[in-house]
Length: 282
Image (cartoon, rainbow, N blue to C red; front, side, top):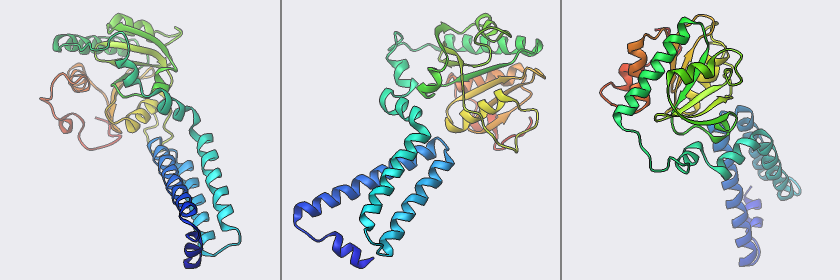
């Protein structure tokens, strides 16, 4: 390894500068790929990145012939494999930004709903969820302002006031948008029919269906997002935030959760609302 380092830094200042720049570039590249894979919980990409870097270091330590050439091959493999794993998400996040940026650049730029409007929004969501619960209509509602644009663009843009009638219409069975998620920011429905990644956690309760798993996945990736789920099979209303789950919600508890999700008031702490237990039926 010592011989490799000595030989690596042999040459004139221009050649050494080029090598240092190359090292910094590779380090930054690996950091970006690893961080992005970790953020997206792409375990296979993380493991593959670590294996490839370990191979490169091992070749240097063992003074393998043409080690520098093989290091370049490893760098190329890191780039290609990570592009294959999250090309679409990377494109959306790096070149188009997040939905939060898009929302701010919309026709509502500079608009901020007041407390009365947000309370009305919470009441409308509670009303819709209770009606759908009694009718065994499934629903998935996401509330937050930092959901990836790739998720928002998978649905249909609405940009409409939150009303119970509209929510119930969207989720009514056999309508075009009923299978996806509705995304709400402030007192506006931004999009409907949005598709979400699904958690494959085997420890989840057996009765958790696609909506519950999708809601949990988004809440784990985006801790500031609150997901509301109405079960189509049982009518049970659940809420998820930062990987925590509250089930069997009545109107008062659901309203308290929405007050926190919409940032109307901070009189109820996160611990009071969510506790510390994951997957607990409450």
